[in-house]
Image (cartoon, helix red, strand yellow):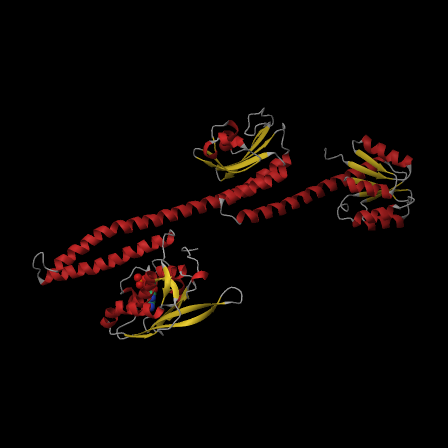
Length: 544
Ligand code: ADP
């Protein structure tokens, strides 16, 4: 509708006045509805909206003040400007109407030019008000859309949300959204289509199809108001293709179709363009996240592959060095024996690194398999201590074990839990000077879990009187490849992978690991593992 004309409601019990006002208004192109009383007017207002109301004050049954008061008390009607036209020209009545919220007051007889000017001014104000209201409504809608879009890092979900919101506004029969790929537009979400989509193998729309090609290349919306059945929908007559643009290219599309020849009005088209702009950011994030995940998986697989491929030649080298050491392949002089010993030491370090890398690859790609069983922690500690006894003795460290043999069984993988213990004990040994003290203890512990309940755990602590960890570096201790900057710690061989793996292994057992440390005084590493209640402990996948 022309912005200078509107739909007017004239409320007056006097037929002559009503006709006179209506005639002037119609003459200016306005649409006019009349009501002969207040109650009739209020009834009309329940069914339709008006841009301006012209209201008489002196009426039987219900006077103009009451009508005005009721209009202003109604949340839906209060914004409609009211011009009072009244035979009472006294100041009191004028003041009362303005107080009640009237926009203007015209005494009868009125000058038609003044009437015209007041109505036009009311109309402009109303138009601005309507626009502001529409913008506010749209802003809060877009805010809500953003909230939903940002909650998802899944491209398909993002496009589904975009399609739902667009169709809600445009009311079309069918629509679809997809991402632009090298060989076409991959459809990710559809509404209102049936078997029509079967003609697109792999749900890919060809990029050389005219409306799609035009939208992708120009990055502009394409509008075909009369398609004559050449769309995707069997009885398609009109189509709108809007690109989802990110930086300098179209990364996705939304297609709307209708069985009527239809021109989408400007408001709807602008709304769709705005939705697409907002969805573009979310879609881009989702695509970045997915490529990041793919790169991460590829990296884990690569690490796993390299570790696996290195194992075979390493075993061969190890075999031959051991054979040479036996001197069965020929006598060796002292120097040669020394060289071989260095080789063996380095081989041991390389084997450790390879096994750490293959563990990391397994953990990160979710391929770590665990063989759960009930385990007695005291026995596990005893085994690990025996494996490392030589290392403690060579540094003349005092090792004390305090693990009662009757602890409840824990639920875990024997091999992996002994890896946890061995790593913590080996660190205690490495990072504690000669003649230091190491204490390993285990006890039953009740840990608070969700709700008010508690879970029975076995708590293990490995305490050393070693070099400790600088407070500043403590937050990074479980990071991959972390090694303290402390020169003394650096003198010990290591890769910085042990604690990272250890934490993952504890966590896949539904346990927790933490530590406390004072620089140059010592550290204590703690971990807890739930006790065996097989029916309560489904076999969890790593990270699950
Ligand atoms: P690595 O021992 O192979 O370097 P870890 O992941 O096991 O790798 O440990 C990471 C770093 O944490 C070590 O390099 C060391 O600086 C520090 N650290 C670990 N355990 C101790 C400990 N018991 N006392 C002092 N520092 C430790």
